[in-house]
Image (cartoon, rainbow, N blue to C red; front, side):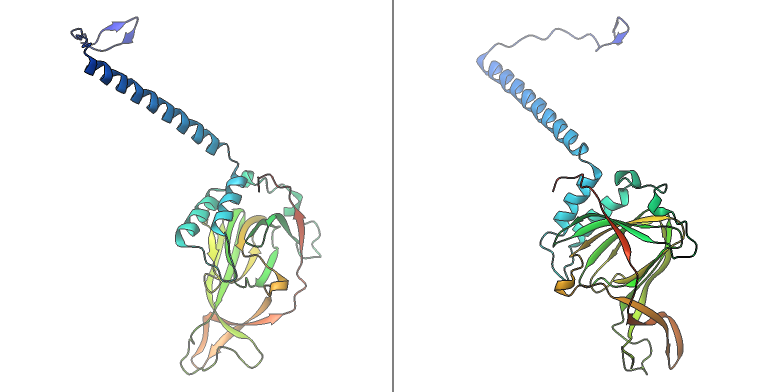
Length: 283
């Protein structure tokens, strides 16, 4: 049975081992000792690596991952599926405290009922490959229907809830008797991609240059914050300006179809207040 010494449990008593001091045994013992020492070194190095990884701030991790995913991005660039999954997974785990936003901040409050609630953009980083920042919407604030030309965009709600409606340009007609994807006043036919309420429990929404809801609008049901990572970012000089649209119902020879709408470019006076945030990550 086990023997307890001072209340501690030790191994069963066994016969004493006879030591073999032959040269081969000594060499074997040295080899085993060296192997143990190497394992200890490897374990220690791994511990240091784990500690270093855990000390990286969430913002630094977001920046590093975004930079890898959008390395050498260009208009129309679509990251490979594994890169999309990696960045989406990171955003899914992000918390408001990780990016230092909270519903108590003044940008989420609206005191003047006579004017539309303003939208504020906290700008963290911008380069020719990608940018990221946080849209801050007080209750009832709206980001009108707009496009993302040639972009891939990751959007994650950090807190609050909002209605998201998004479209992709239609590539086929819902009614075989129709023969145009564009009508006489210049509106184009678009198909609904998403029409739903999202909140912080919702997973990251990813839209692509040609699908996934490249045209979308946000309506805040409560004060909410949305973090966007997009690449390549808007660039008016390179023809990637933001275009806004109006919606009108689609009606074919067989009647209306709620999955389709006519979208027409419109002049918009929508503006956001931009706040450049101090970088707390290493570029």
